[in-house]
Amino acid sequence: MGSGRCAACRYLRRKCTDDCILSPYFPSNNPQRFVSVHRIYGASNVSKLLQRLPTHLRAEAADSLYYEAQCRLEDRVYGCVGLIFLLQQQIHAAESQLIKTQAEIAVMKSQVQHP
Amino acid sequence: MRGQEPRSTSSCAACKLLKRRCTPNCIFAPHFRSDEPKKFAKVHKVFGASNVSKILVEVPQEQREDAVNSLAYEAEARLRDPVYGCIGAIALLQRKMIQLQHDLALARACLARYAATPSIGDRVIMEPFGDFPDVCGGSIDSSSLNLSYELSQEAHMYDFSQIPYV
Image (tube, rainbow over the protein chains, first blue to last red):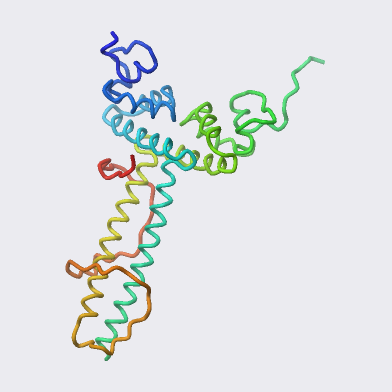
């Protein structure tokens, strides 16, 4: 029983059943993955969320939960939202640069056409 | 008159939902006002009140409002997209950024070609548009220059290998 438990059931100190919903996504060889997710969302919330999803989407959901949990553990205040803000700022800056460059090209074009 | 326990008339949204007495030092009260019940409901559904409380306790008081707002944002994203949550928005923004960098590189290459054109010579007056690195390469295709970027959050089917975080 002990060696066959998934990381979740091992951490929660409970029996890992054959139909354990967390088992496929929190293997015993990566205990930190479950610890991170459990600290932010809680095993119960993760189980409920996965149960509501079709089976073929659960792996992606577990991955995204893990990434978000990691973000939140590294940045308690902003979590992954900090990265969203940063990307939005970078996109805004790049768009401004692109507009400027477009304007410079337009100037160059007009000077070539009307020297 | 039946005896009843005195009820707080100023319970925060969290304590109302959790059906408990809202104490003066309730950690949720400053950030989950009673007139915003949905905000806490969403955060509680995704993270759980206990986990939110633990996160807030670890954050300096002056940053708790930001923490709550970011948790609310994440919860909203997760409820809207249970599979990808905020990661979906991040993947979309990263793709936008990659496209934008590509377009910018093309534009700079185009500009460099104009600047190098002998017919323009030394009489070209360059308006001071600001500094930019010397990035050249690729052929010029004006159709690839797209200035309108909609930062939509309605995106699905992401490739997690592109997520740089962690």
